[in-house]
Length: 444
Image (cartoon, rainbow, N blue to C red; front, side, top):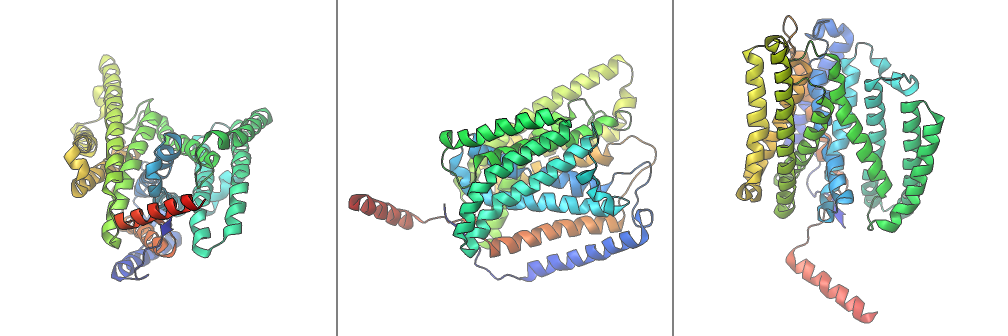
């Protein structure tokens, strides 16, 4: 499949505006480092996790799920016709994960301790598992996007070397990840043997693809683990988080919602970029993605409602409804999240006319994105039932706005510098290619 760059000016008034927002955020970050968290944020011992954890980390990692959902759809479930959507999804995922990591540097009280998970390997730490999943997944995303760099500069030999070495990297990285998670050489050796055998076996049973399938599998494994483990972090606060969001099934809830929003983000990203860069919309592909997203949203809604009902029955039997669920404000937030953020987009995307209409499909996808964002914010701090209250400071808002602006800026620059979008042939060009292929076949 051929890819191309966006043929437009590198810097425009839109990118200039994004740079200005980034500059404001940079000033806010400098103030945070100069004056400390206490003087520049509204975080406290009672509210240690706020906007930067909720939006800059949990929301962004959720919105980066399009990388692994598109990979699973294309390479595992036979959705080859969606292959052209993969590079842009991977690019957006790199930006989401990269800036989520950068935001942690701003958020944690001692910034240089961000490197601690690299050499400190504790037992049984969910946050340690998330950290290493994200680190390794970023390398997977970078390797998946590498062919666009090779194409841009015509590095054919380097691309061939990449194809040969990437499976070996995936095998070694999987064995290493197994070791640091289990602290067992036996399990690491077993992982090395199993995935080495798989590396030789996969090319015989999979279709020809631009990316080694073992690397794709590695990325899907890492994504599934850390998306669910982000939910596991909040299993520690059953007495502080409203049970509209807390349950023992939080890991499954986080993973299911990440899969759904991953497809929604593909729709949002490709629709907005098509309008911004005057590119073909590829309506049929996005219609298919919308149908897949609808199925996952309904599955998530059903699982979530059964989960909340089970928790409510247990709380009612113990006479602790108010203590576990909080007041009417919590009920209202839960109703808005589930009805507007999940049920409405699920119904809209289930309607064929909406899936076919670019504007209607985009609105439904945006509602789902907002629903998942609200879910993550509710779980992080809006749904807490502790004493007092937390409202982000202007500096917190400035850093978060700058983070989103930086992601949009670098996405825009990347698609203008690298061949990210697939070449969409017109009917005349397709007919010419058919004639050329027939001529080659006749000559042969």
